[in-house]
Length: 176
View 1 (cartoon, one colour):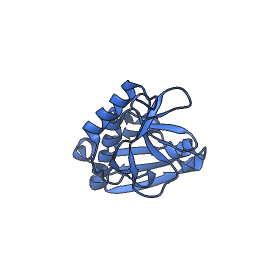
View 2 (tube, rainbow, N blue to C red):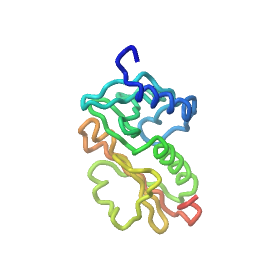
View 3 (cartoon, one colour):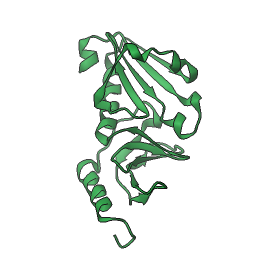
């Protein structure tokens, strides 16, 4: 607080650390594996007047940081801030769902760039637990689709958009 950080923001970092601090995460399928371990850092003011803080160390050398946004969003920051999911819980759900889907899918297909636009996501039901912002999940009758647009938005590179289609799933594979 002696550095001008509001008490509420210090409390937010403490609450994050008490709940998530030290949690070692499995590799995420995108963002070069995601953060390795949740370990918050000192809050920093955002250009728009809110506060954010680093969520933890990157698993590999990536050109962005994993951040917790002003409203608790989990996202990445480099050239610009891009919230991926509305909460830390939603990021964890997304990573868990990716591992679950990869385990049970009979086929996994990856599409990138303009090919992502060809997916007819309107025919699928959204997966609300991942609280989609830049990244989201959709469920079909025998498939799950993950769409990752965070890096594309962060670096203004539409070709970075990626979708992963997990198909050949039964009821267990779809719902866990």
